[in-house]
Image (tube, chains in turn cyan, blue):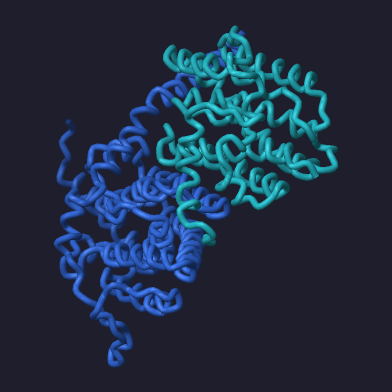
Length: 234
Length: 329
């Protein structure tokens, strides 16, 4: 099997799980400690299955260099404030939900997609509820939520660049995603960001192994202990 | 203010005496006291203090372990550690809820924690310096916590006892995971074995201090035992813990850092060395390696989350107002 698609989906889940786990002990309310950890755990579970389809999960997670990771640039973006994290989650979970729905009948990814879509539907709902609360909350929360969406919008075009090995109607996926995200943003009394959905940096860059600067630091932290003890088991 | 007549006062006293007698009888008969039951003010205050301290320990205890989530050396270990830290947040939730049944809100308790007016377990004022510390916390710190907490499942206050049943099940899972982590390190490379031994060397004595001061210096013990909030003395529980750990350390292939630790045939228990109570009181007073760091991270998370909580409240209020408007329209 061509491992590119498993790596792309697996790296998305692995990297976003890591970012969400950085919230542990820092969440704004105890219920969110539980919720963010739960989403992070679901994503890590998906990542482990997907990476194992492509090889050894730990070798792939801990021994690849930055340029070999195939995740979207969106998921590696630092957490920022809670609104920024929620914006990232809304944009990604909506994508992941429709993607997995579309993959339900896929001979390779179908079994995973059918199971994971249930988890992801919860992630999307969680992000949607918070987008509504923050958007239609106080003036401050509205401003923060809008800034989160504005800042991340340019990373969303990449999601719909075809991934080799995934037989999907990418254009339809994008239409569904845009309609869903737009509806939530408008219900939350926010504006759909006006900027382009691809930055000046090559579109589709993450999938091709081109990442943003903070990603290298994230990997340095994630990989250092494993790499410090070559060949050890844990 | 209304003045109470002598006859009125006598009636109040009689009612009070009847309540006290009923409460004492229920405790003596090992019945559970429930939130709506009458209870002495001091019993309520003691429970609030103890449950709050326990809840605070759960949420502060997330910090030293979360310190290693982003560096966990395998994806399997990372998942286990994330789930553990999540469980601790969940335990915090049940315990704050148990305190709410006594009429004290989570908000109020968190304010007291942040102001330094309520404590959390001093063990979390020690740093997690290596990955093996995650294992040592699971094995020793969770092990000590379980030894302390299993008797609390029979605590006289119903909501606390029931919360503890669930917490103890999860804690015992955490303890086995910690033990298994240490075992893997101990049987691993030389560097991994040394890492495990170093962690046990650093966590052993602070874990023994988790049972609190010796019985003759423990200020709340006697009353709590009489109320069946507490079932065994600090020293009894500490001894039980030492006796459990010695064979486990042997199985791990690690040593416990106490030259005086040896089996006492006559007592049928282990003798162990003197605990440095100066260190215990010092850490308790706020001079431990991480006291300042733990509480400032907690305050920072709380303060930085204030706008989120305000937004959620504002949104809920708007929604209620809209629903009412629709209902009256």
